[in-house]
Image (tube, rainbow, N blue to C red; front, side, top):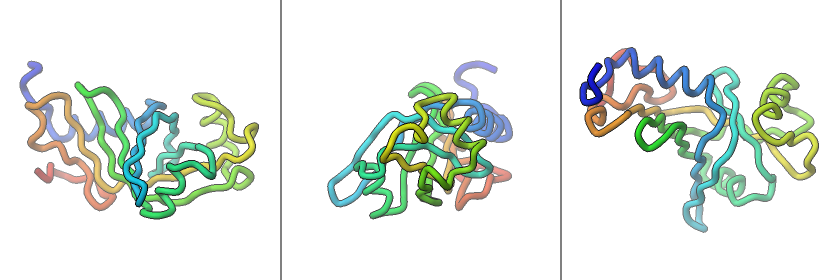
Length: 153
């Protein structure tokens, strides 16, 4: 397919699913009364949630407690999966599932070995996928947490 021909919807959904299952780095943006905050973090997929970890007293965690929302980007500016997510849970280190903790430790630091960390479970609500301006139309592949049979825009 030519670089200026948009991928079919099903191909974009498959690309988003693959990237969220296989990639392990993302930009995580939160906001609150102190304003927007953006950090690079590792993540792992856990069912229909994305899991990352950071300091329990961090601005990211404070913002998530305040708003319950985040936006994250996986990929590059030329080929991105953009996710609007809802906070599913802030999981204390002793309560996280061992397989999730082990998979996270394989791609980042191990929060179990660093006091003061918490795991963050984010549940995607809207996902957009595009690899250039030609793919702006039809970029929304998930709404309200459900994968769409057709694009929404």
